[in-house]
Picture: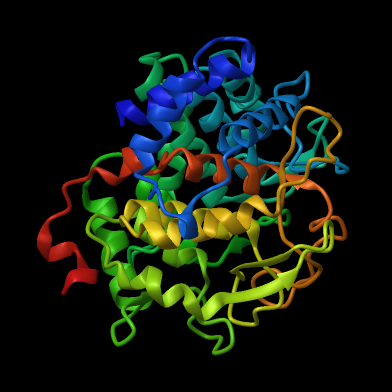
Length: 395
């Protein structure tokens, strides 16, 4: 992990001053860490360093004066998940003040928002903090993951009270069967149990105790297809039974998770013409309708492939993502990656927002950055020493 943090530290220094003579050292670290093959068919763009710096600069430019970041250009909405990702990226780059800008925003609203909502920060809000919408457990788990990374990297306990509040609330959502409720809607009704959110909570709450054991038992009984050996997203829906991110995130979260789950993600693979630049791009859809390339999810797959030492597959995914980089952002010297390549549906049948394929998005850009630099933001919570008998995926 220290090598990965060192890479991010150097990246942060280069963003501050591109005149520093660190190019040779940076390239050596990148290629040693990633183990990129020196073969023509898998060779990544020679401008990889420059591309990565421009994406990092774009993320930095997205932060507002109140510490929050909007999810993409041309939008006013702020996502808790996207801000947690940004805080992780800032922390890992050594941009500690920027990370603290995100954390301070939520830390200052423990009483006015978190406690008054009976736990949980809003999943979405406007850029000025208004119009908060529902408390989604999975996104709050991501904020806790960001805080865990901050404490590990900086050694600073400044936000421990916030972390404790988040952990206690997440634990309180556990049902008798071990599963976790997904949070609460605006009208106070409880959100159903969501597999993705449950595995994020498993990672976010550090250590291994009855809480984690209960989650694994629930997943084994209710969200694991023993024949396919895959996590199930929507048990009652044949069409959307599986979801692509459970392949990548599952592998990044659970110890000794089978590599076959990554190979089986081929069921979401498709090719589209990107609406923003006309490039033919191959990647992964949210689900098996295969009507879009989900660029954030494709970046997650690239990182999971790297974790599994599936170098060819990782490099292939990164090469496709490079074709999706948008240089025509609001800042000439920076660029990002859109959420998807084209208009279509997200997981299920809900239509994506109009500008989803036409403007850089935080989530896609940050996961691409993580993938290039082989930085797994879930690595800290992965170290749980789970008893062999509880690892249902190996039974």
